[in-house]
Length: 288
Image 1: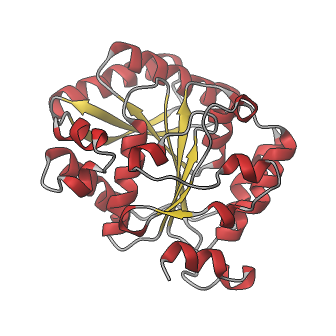
Image 2: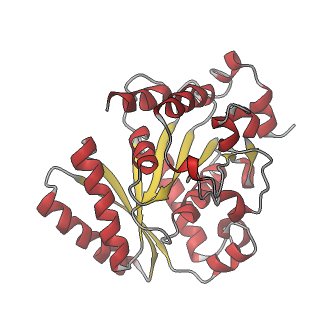
């Protein structure tokens, strides 16, 4: 029986304690602009964490334009749309991806998924608690932009990784997302990852531009330079084959960078959780 099937078949009581005594790190991977490689970052980071021996649940939170399954060449029978219709539970739709990561797939082309209702958020909050203590990391791959779903999932996470590319429009849109979360929702801490950079020098230049704007208009903000993923011709080759670059070309520059990023997260000592429960993160949203 594979790991996904193990989770599906495990009783609720056992799910709470079977694997790890501590709750997972909940990390949102987000961006202001589409096309910056955010989903590639999410899936390759999940792969890297699995290679480090961590149990990972990857949530496709681009609810009406999902593409994690397409990127990985997977064909899930059910997805989050079936959950919100009340037809399936999260455990029913759980699938296994590369290296044994667990994936909660979303739907594509279904407009009603573009803006979750409060009751749907509450239902999801209750469902996701089933996986508490059954994983080390919950990675949330959001949609692009600043719509309600993107804001919701950013607020649900303890940590946020904002993915930028060196393009000026990417920087502008990332700042817009950060500004909305900071001014309207009092989010003060963001980690910045520059994707498709020609080198560390260019990545640092992009980060400094963002920091200068943030320091001027959002002085109480904390921006942490997480690093960069280099431009790598192997990555689009892997995408065309519907495989992870980290899996297909493990010695590629991008693959090595994803693994170093995973190692950095593993070596960090995360801040203690407020109540040791994923539900804490979701419940806080309903006070807005």
